Amino acid sequence: MARITELLTALYGDAPSEPVILAAMRQLAKQTQGSLARIRQQLIAAPVVHFDESGLRVAERLWWLHAASTEKLTHYHVHAKRGHIGMRAGEILPHYKGVALHDYWRSYLKFSDCQHSFCNVHHLRDLSFIVEQ
Figure (cartoon, rainbow, N blue to C red):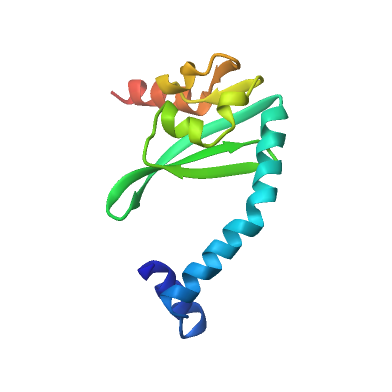
């Protein structure tokens, strides 16, 4: 909440109270549910989807931002778990039947209804590391 207040103050010179910000966040979450469901369904139907996860801090603890994307669509969700439990929470990978493009994090391989392809950017990074040693 402090960061939101700080951002709004920097942008507008003042910020609404915390209850007003929380009410706005709840309203926004409610209004975007339909769009998020459509994005999830379109990603599930896509022939190839890129999956990735990045760490971020939530209340000074490490959480994970999970991403599923194509050239035109992106879905994010935040979860306390990095692995398959966190991945399941996004409601895309458990239903996905296409080609899942990702790093070779073992948790992705628990989803057996899709094909798996490993990201060449990760391969190049690993090969560069080996060459530089």
